[in-house]
Amino acid sequence: MTYGFRVVANPLVGTLDAGADPGADPGADPGAWGASPTADVLAFHRRLPGYAATPLLSLPGVAARLGVGELVAKCESVRFGLPAFKMLGASWATYRALCARLGGEAQLGEWHDMDDLSRLVKPLLPFRLAAATDGNHGRAVARMARWLGFEARIFVPATTTQARIDAIGSEGAEVVVVDGGYDDVVTRSAREEGRRCLVISDTSWPGYADVPRWVIEGYATLFAEIDDAFGRSSRRRPDVVVVPIGVGALAAATVRHFGSDAAVIGVEPTDAACVTASALAGRPITLAGEQRSIMAGLNCGTPSPVAWPVVSRGLAGFVTIDDDWARDAVRTFACCGVEAGETGAAALGGLTALVRQGRASALGDLVHERSSVLVLVTEGASDQPAWRKILGTELVGG
Ligand SMILES: Cc1ncc(COP(=O)(O)O)c(C=O)c1O
Image 1 (tube, rainbow, N blue to C red):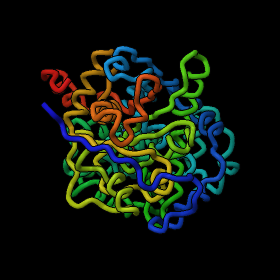
Image 2: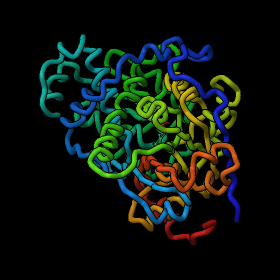
Image 3: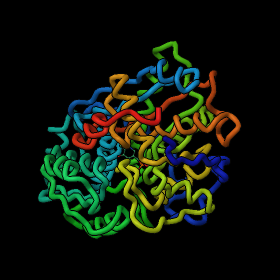
C-alpha cells in the first residue's frame, strides 16, 4: 500500500531577520519580536498548577528502522493535565493580555500561585475568555479561564468530533459550533472581543498581533526543557527538527529557538497544507474549501500572519502527508509506549515519508545514518475513541 505525500524544499529559505513580508500584517514584522523572554515564560509556567517538564525520549528502534543516527521525541501527551502542548501558549498569552488590560504587569501585583493570580484579576469579573479552536487550543483557553474564575466561550468548526467538544465542555466552557472551517471559526471568535471579554487566538489578523505573538512566546518553555534535557544527557543535539504545522505558531517558535543550529522541517496534512502552498506561492494564501484531515489540530487554511515571516524564511522545507501516515505513526508510537494522537504523531509520519523518498530527493540529504532527529509529539490521545479505533486496526504500510 502506498500513501500520498510530497516533499518540498522551502523556496523562501533565508535569513530570519530579513524584514517584514509584504504580504503580512505590518504588526507581524519580525522586528516587533524583541528579545526572547524565555526565563520569564518558564518562571510563569512553573507557578501554574501541575507544572512538570514533559519527557524527552530516545527511540533507537524506530531510528534504526528509518536509517537515521538518532531519533528523539519530545512528548506532550500530558501537559498541565491536558493532552497537548497548547496550554503553554494559551496560558502565557492570557496572562500577558490580562496584564495589558490591567495597565501592565506591575499594576497586577505580586503573585506566587494560581490562587493569588485569580484574586488579583477578580476586579475584572464578570469576565470571559473566547477562542477559536480545532480542539486543543480552545480546551487550554477554557482551562485557563476556569483557573482564573472566568467564563469561556469556545468556537469550533462543524467537523469537530463529539469527543473534542465534550473535552472542551468538561472545562466548564460554552462550546459554539460554527458552520464552516477553521478560518470561519476564527472570524466568528474575533467578534467576541470587548470590555468583558478577551479573545485568545493562536492565529493573527490585521490589527490583532500581540496575543498570537504571546502564544508563540509561551512555547519557549517546551524548548527550554529540551535544552535542559539535552544538557543533562550525553545525547547529541539535534541537527534536524520535525514539527507539525497548523497555522504555524509552533513552527515559528521552533525556528526562533533553533535558528541555524538545526534544519527545521514542517509537516502538514495533504489537504491542509496552507504554509507549504504559501511558500510555493511566495506569499501567504488561503486554501479553498474545507480541511478534513484526521490530524485535527493541523486543519487550517491560512498561515498566521504573525508566524509567516518567521516560518517562511526559517523552515528548511515541508512534508505534506495523507492521513494514513499519521495513523501508522500513532501505531509506531504506541508500540514504543508513547501515547500520540493523530496530530501528535504527524511529525513522525512526515519523517517516515521523507526517509521513504530517499537520499537523492529534496531534503533527503538531511536525514541519514549520522543525523540526529528531534520530532515534536505535540499531543496525546486528545480524541480517545478516534485513537483507539486507529490502534484497533491492522498495521499497514510498514
Ligand atoms: C496537537 C497540535 N499539534 C500541532 C498543532 C499546530 O500548531 P500551530 O497551529 O501553531 O501550527 C496544533 C494546533 O492546534 C495542535 O493542536
